[in-house]
Structures are given as C-alpha cells and as structure tokens.
Image (cartoon, rainbow, N blue to C red; front, side):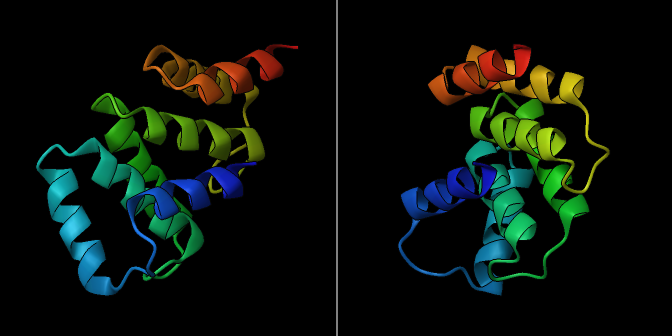
Length: 118
C-alpha cells in the first residue's frame, strides 16, 4: 500500500527518474519550507530513487514535511510506522500520522486511519 502511494506521489510530480541534482534541489526547497519537496525527498530516500536508500533520511524528511503541514509526508510517515520501515512498528504512531493526513485533507489518510482503528 505504502509503496503504491509513494509511486503515485513521485509520478504525480514527474514522469522521469530523479537524479542526484534533483535531490539537492528538493532538499533546498524543503529547507525553504516547501512541504511537497520534503515528501518527494522522503520518498526518494525511502525507495532509493536517485539517491541511496536510507530509511532514517526518509523519516527525517517526512517528519519535516508533516510538521510543516504536508499531508503526503504525514501519510507516508504513518505508513512507515504501520509497516515498521526504518522505525519500530507502532500502530499508535501510525494512527497519529494517518489521522494528521486526514485532517490535512487527504481522503486516503482518513481511510487508512479508519482501517487501523478496527
């Protein structure tokens, strides 16, 4: 589920593969407060697209994006906690971030948080 969401997120932004220069551009944009760039960069690190796979960096950028009000970052962070990817698996943490994604207007965050509550 999370792999599919990540792929959709990346395809939504661009139909091409990311290069290291793109990672640097997204890092600069994320540092400047562009929460969508934080989500893209997190996804790049999560799956190793154009950069080395690094779950801790993925979490770092997802947290930064989520803290800034980026629903996609919250959604992906929730998925990482739900599946225990790079973090200790925690349904309560997953629910927290998926609910934030829902609150930020992502219907999939609402659906995933409801599934987790059952």
